[in-house]
Structures are given as C-alpha cells and as structure tokens.
Image 1 (cartoon, rainbow, N blue to C red):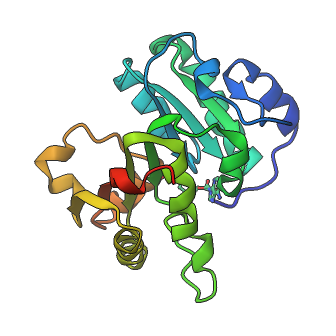
Image 2 (spheres, rainbow, N blue to C red):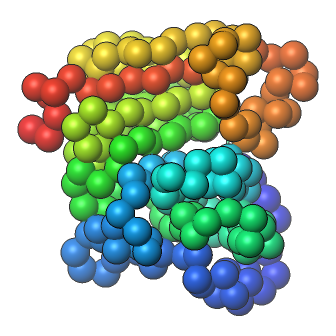
Amino acid sequence: MRMRHKKHGAERIAACAELLISPPTDAPIDPRDCFPNDRPISLEIGCGKGDFAIGTAAKRPEENLIAMERVPDVACLALEKAMATKGDRPDNLRFLIGNAQNLASIFSPRSFSTIYLNFSDPWPKSGYAKRRLTHANFLALYRNLLIPDGLLKFKTDNTELFEFSLEQFSACGLEILRETRDLHAEEWAKDNVTTEYERNFSSQGTPICSAWVRFPKENQHV
Ligand SMILES: C[S@@+](CC[C@H](N)C(=O)[O-])C[C@H]1O[C@@H](n2cnc3c(N)ncnc32)[C@H](O)[C@@H]1O
C-alpha cells in the first residue's frame, strides 16, 4: 500500500499510544500482557487502514485482536480510525507497527488462536516469492506463534497468489479446512468481515478466494 508521507505522523501515532504495542527491545512480548483479560488472541498481519481489525473486534467481543502493519503512515490511519470508534467495542484491539519477517522476535510462541492474512501483497515477479506472506518461510513463523489447533485464515483477490499459497500449504503439510474461489457465495462465510481491498475488488466483480488452514499436531512447534 503506497501513500504520501503523513505530516506529523509520529505525533499522530503517539496520540493513539493507548492502542499501540511497542515492539520489544529484548525478549518477545507475551500478547496476553497487552489485554485486560485472558480471552483468545488473534493476529492480523498487514492490516492496512484497519477496517477488518476494527470490524472484527466489534463483532467478536469474546476475542482479542492484534493488528500488525509495517508502514507507519498506513498504521497511523488505522490507529486514528480505531481511536475514533473506541467506545463502540470492548477493550479488545491493539496495533503493532512492524514487519512480519521479525515475528519470532516480537511475540512469544503459542500466543495466537488465529492468524489472519487479508489481501497480502502478491509480489507477482519471479524472484520475489519469498516475500509473499504465505511462503513456507512465513508459514514456519506462524506455526510457532499459533496455539495447537490454531488457524490461519487467508483471503485474496489474486488467483496466482491463491494457487501459490495452496501449494505452500500442501508442501508444509497443512490441513485445508475450507477452500473457496468465491467466498461471498459461501454459506460458511456469512459472518465474514470485509476489508477495504475486499470491498474494492468485490465492487468490481472480482471473486474473493479464501482458505482456512491448520497445522497438523505432529508438525506443530518442532
Ligand atoms: C494490499 S494491502 C491490504 C490491506 C488490508 N489487509 C486490506 O485488505 O484492505 C497489504 C498490506 O500489508 C502490509 N504488509 C505487507 N507486507 C507486510 C509485512 N511483511 N509485515 C507487515 N505488514 C505488511 C502492507 O503495508 C499493506 O498495508
């Protein structure tokens, strides 16, 4: 997501400090320390302007959610939106500005019940596959972050990225629980919370692909 540099970005982010988790300087963070209760915690990677995170936190008060975004100017917009809607949901949403490549040093293992990847950058050029957030190298990071039976829920408009991801899931031995190339037509997706990109693609008639996957028990946390 490209965007013009925000004026006073640092001050604007600082004004949202109550929703922001600072990246750790020494040991990884236990995400349970970020919330006032013991509810299950999910992680969204690449939250963009935060629509999915804010919508999910409002819709699922029984869960906590951390939304991660690597571009500070984009995270700033998500944070400001979340601050503006703070009173409309329980205290169950936090943000972290950081790169998923560093997840192992940011969060302690077995922390999350679900990881969401929504409309991740497709990196279509050959030679860039390792940057895709569904590449096997990232799946290895998620495997350590998820609790046993934790789920990875993935949505994309991009069929090439979807096919690539399914191959990576299979190669890593993940169990595919749900798979669709038209999410909005699925009965099981009736509680789907849409993202900004999802609404844009959908309004242009592009079907949304999605998969929910689980790491087999014998492969978890090796
Ligand atoms: C195509 S946008 C989708 C935004 C949002 N999820 C949506 O569906 O509307 C992808 C977002 O993921 C972020 N992103 C890409 N790679 C990332 C990484 N390695 N770590 C954290 N965020 C990342 C980008 O900065 C961008 O905001």
